[in-house]
Length: 334
Image (cartoon, rainbow, N blue to C red; front, side, top):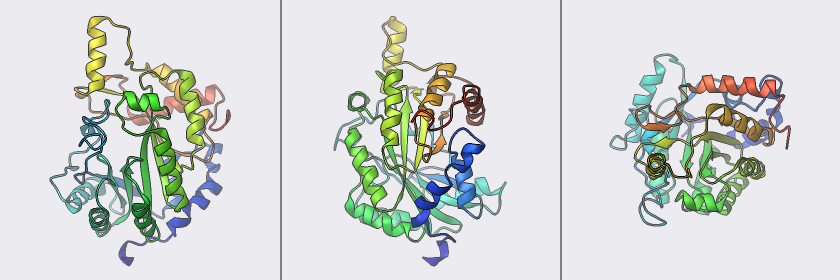
């Protein structure tokens, strides 16, 4: 296991993160994930997405059926990410893709598709250890749901975090139980809170994922949500817009409302509205929270709305310009 041990004790990274987190505020109006990784690792790192064949409890009937109303995992799985392939094969193909440009790159195995703690502990151990045995893989990122974690799994992940880089990333999506029920999420915000606190107390780096623009959520609710997210002991946060993906239940509702001229309950934000909303959302986040992204980009043939025609870096440039023009910085309203 020493083969993939890093130069740093990543179990202590939270203290370093919080001490250094204000540095980027001098350059950018928010606490930037890319800059954090450059300060943290002694080499370039790249996540490689993995589909390890997991499911979700709101897909297989344990909690519900059909999954989240907005979700189609194919929108973010790259070509090499395929559950029919072994974890090792997916990582090797990902390394070949990224390594052409940066031969000295190191990698994080990103267990991304579906809920990656939704299996018996021995199965998780087998998959995680397989990933960490691949050359140049120096850590793992585990994407999961807050209702798919328990003390036994946390204890094992804590042990992993003492010998390599580990992040557990929870799909929180909304801080409002009415919204979570409406999108068939199958868990409550209190379950998200408990999962994040359990992970933090174990000394494991913890990320969260939130969607802005979910049906029924007003601007005022979104801003209150930022304050609720800030109160959680998260280290990282991913934000993205509500996307209406073809053939999802959310898309079927959106198309019905469009075709029949009904009062819309499912809306896709215009670009200017979303930029302003995200900027003010960031202004209500505590400065120590590291922001990993602000938009998600689905394949054009799967995306019904919003179709902004921007790449992620182009959106980020517009957001930074808006924040500077309006004198908004992360935490300014907190």
